[in-house]
Length: 131
Image (tube, rainbow, N blue to C red):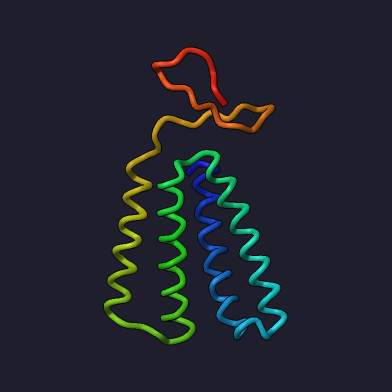
């Protein structure tokens, strides 16, 4: 698994922590959950941004939200005892879709220029390099 995929999965897992922390803030009235909310949210966003350097945005966002939604529903089912057969079936569908996106493979690698950190956007029809 590439670094981008590892960061994407980590970002999705951190996003679950962000949602659970949000619930625990009780309307932003409890300090400790607010601090965790900020920590999980910021860390998740940074990991997602780094993952986007090596993955297409649409695929990354679909996988990220799939992990977040499925994980949040699982936390609801396990921790908060809010479970239902339809919810579990939907989680399975989300996970199947996410797995399908990963198995479909990445398109051509996205080269990043080392000194600028920008992605090269040339196509086979153009001469020269745009960035």
